[in-house]
Image (tube, one colour):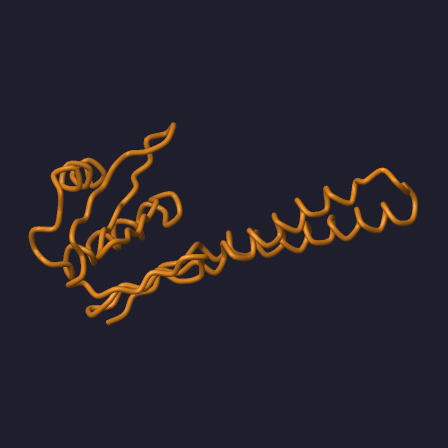
Length: 153
């Protein structure tokens, strides 16, 4: 059975609306530059709005697919596709100012990092259960076991 994990629908809608708004702001700045404020070089600000629009759109395309045979993380600049047998270690750490949980799956010479704030608490615990079910025994580190016990309590 294949499970797909993405961002919530309400946040996806917010990102789509935000991307359209940022795109409109970029076009508006270009319009103002060429019609009303000539020679002020504010056209370069529009590039920031176009970048934000693109970032918000691509954020909605991130998708984690867990099946009994393989793991796929698609939609980003560096997609990941690997089989469960390819995993060499699975670690978990607390990162950032708010000590958010980050899961690191190492396979081959690459690693996939999954952040708990992206998936929310409930789906993140489901992801951890699927990973424990499908991955080979002996790949979990002591840090993984300790933080898993903390977040389930």
